[in-house]
Length: 106
Image 1: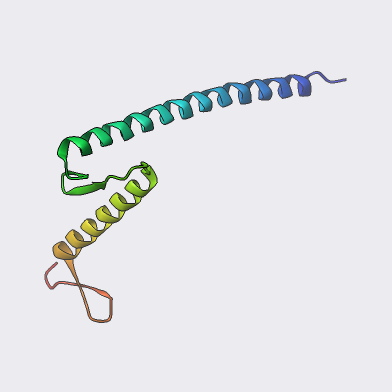
Image 2: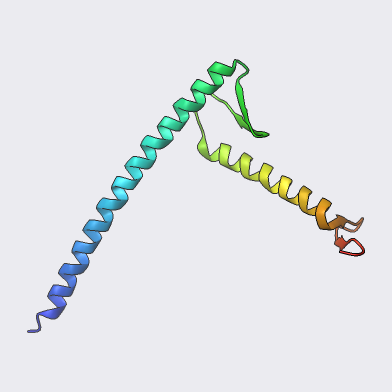
């Protein structure tokens, strides 16, 4: 009987155990930081008195139950719109048929 496959299986199991433990620690740390972020946003919203916070032109909505996914999606949409707007004003303009045309001389 060859011994190498047994050692290989043991080493693979050990690696999965170590990686699983690291992933578990990282997820626990992420949850702790997400909770701290939610409490900081709550503190900012209560401190401003208007129910929403504004930072650098990006709005972060405040609701009773914090939804990080919703905040990230809304922020991503705002950033995409800003990028498209600045790209259009810098190098191209939108034609009637929806195609992007270059300005002369650019």
